[in-house]
Image (cartoon, rainbow, N blue to C red; front, side, top):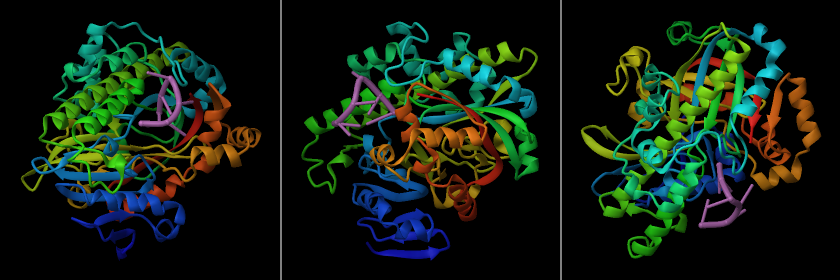
Length: 465
DNA sequence: ATGTTC
């Protein structure tokens, strides 16, 4: 690999049609663990219609494309690829703020965590939180979070605090398979497993007082963070379209450097159908997080009837969207990358025009999370993208082999973190030691200038699959 | 990530 350091935390790797750009530190560049992930972002530069291939400081190995990567393609000559988005379509993060202070929450924290755990089914195959029929699911595909609000789960004002209003188009349920529909029916309002979680956090530090004030953030404030996606519904859609592309576009895909980069020309009917089906899954995920936050609100008000809880923002970090840069339409794949719109961007609702878009970057179970704000510079150097999390350091298998459950529980106990989980295995696979240091990731993001820190939060309690 | 390896 031909890697050149352009400036501090910005590297250029020689690519095929374009060069790849990586925002990271020298340690990551030199670490053999990340060699494959860096090769993956280089592979992306070989795809048709590529405009930019960018990796974030939380880069790690993924299916075809690296996680923590952005792939930008021309809408006419370029492609759309399920691997550039991820199996968990519109995996994302939602942050709820409260009028509650940490000291008031501490004595009843266990009860609150238990209440939330009962309200939101977690774990692999979790189901049965709400009953919907096929017609509802069709509406969810089209209307996303708006469907949930129309059903009484939350309020209309929530919608402007969700990326794209929680509703993407085109999204035609006819492009979604029967099998995906079957899976989607009983999974709405469930958390899932793996790195998905609900976390009760407290604001530990404020970096940007002016923005924090506008966002309604204060030191010691209790917040609730939700990290989850489109469950088996999105997973099935990704699986279906990988198969469809394999069966119907074999000559188009014959010279791929990696089979997992399978794709369709964006302008091809299959590319268009996948885009539409992907939007259905994205809308399902927006509805899912809307439902979950409503359930959490009920649990919260049971414990604290006189306190308020409201939505700060909801971001997607596994998605592809049509965006325009320099009057050219592009299909921007963000896989483990968060949109980062700076102040004044016309896509923002009025309330965020002067601040820029809230950006949510959670860490791992025992570590900090950040609220950041989008930066104009991101629109210039990263196609309005920034990092999405701490980024995995160790694979699941390696985690199970090297880490000890009792030791992990002791660590969390020492940090005063209450945990409720469906199983031990997920906890070990998601232990803090498995992730990079989120503080470092966010530091690079800010120094490069693709988002700015507003507040740092630390965990008080966590619910996991 | 996932009715757990596509």
